Image 1 (tube, rainbow, N blue to C red):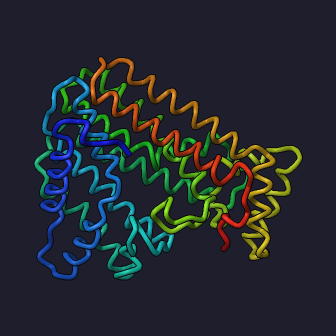
Image 2: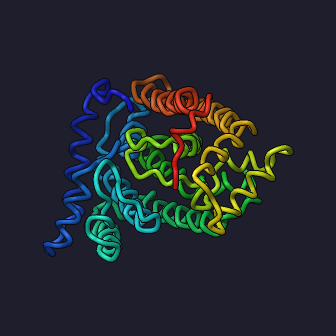
Length: 341
């Protein structure tokens, strides 16, 4: 997402993060280790480690926050393993998901092991932010449960949906940035600023994914496209459109028809059309614009530095990709590109 070579030492530190992950996630059980090797073979974009390492540099000096970044990335990766079980996802990070390759039961054990093994082996237990990390993990779980509680709820409010995002997405970004800033000797007010940045970045990141979910190209998402609407998880484009005076009732009826198994091969086209004419995609993009600006403003408390510049570039990258999704795939509603159940 950014050129890590522009930040002296960052590429080496990311390699150290991976070394820590491999050290913290080791098992004497051959079957368990086989699953761990499979998981660690696909690293993903490593956005959270990059955030941690950049925030640790916001005071202008590089400090060793590599194990911090590793612990947070392990917790995130374990949560993805469990997510894929719930979603019955076939792929993750460009390869078969753990549950698809090894089975649901084994995937549960793999995700659990990664967290428990890390808790036992890490030397960071006495860090002030360590307990906060588990608070954030609790918040993440609460957000996921709240999302499930609102499945097929066409009356869900935008406020409730944003609250869910703050839990299930922004929480881990927050601990990634906050712990990095703490390790980088930031003042309490600066740590809070880093966490505010993470909160807004998390909202931006999730809303971009909300748009991406309507585009049926695995090359963009690098994971199974499920189309949340079909699964009863209504994201902001749909939530906004449900309240449209002309088309909201029609979209709600389609949602209920899908829940009851009543749909046709034209249903996807109709969903996209109704969300488009109700300005659901446009409204989501405007909220993305707002959160991108607020994220960058949160960094104003820090002096100019390469770390601050790269955090701003991360925001710009996600922001621009959201605009491209709309302009390339959603603006003219090329219906053949929408997901079919």
